[in-house]
Image 1 (cartoon, helix red, strand yellow):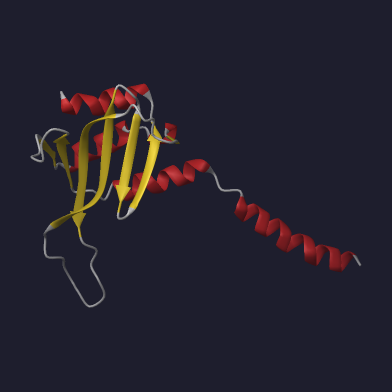
Image 2 (spheres, rainbow, N blue to C red):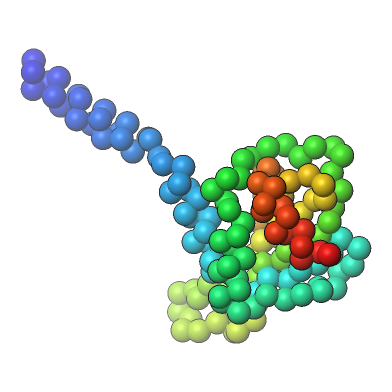
Length: 147
């Protein structure tokens, strides 16, 4: 009986242990994915022409760190939101099986849409949109790019 009980408890403990995922690990995944960015274009709301390009790896790292993603909360975008601008993140395509190098061209992989007067950001990746409430410090940092 004890052996049967132990056989049931061990898999249960393993499965429950895998279920409890630390939220910081998820944020680390975002940082890792965004750190692959090779160019960030700053596009104000009233134009489709970039006003600034961030392309140096140190500047991109600083930008991603300044986002403070560990403080982001997934929320619904308020109706009174006004678009301020977009950050378009680009990188080279992934090397596929049978290839030994990329074509060197950068492709948009993510858009970060910023709104004025409210600390909200929308991430658009492929056909998926996620809206986050960000800290006031993060919003100030992002809004400075559009002034």
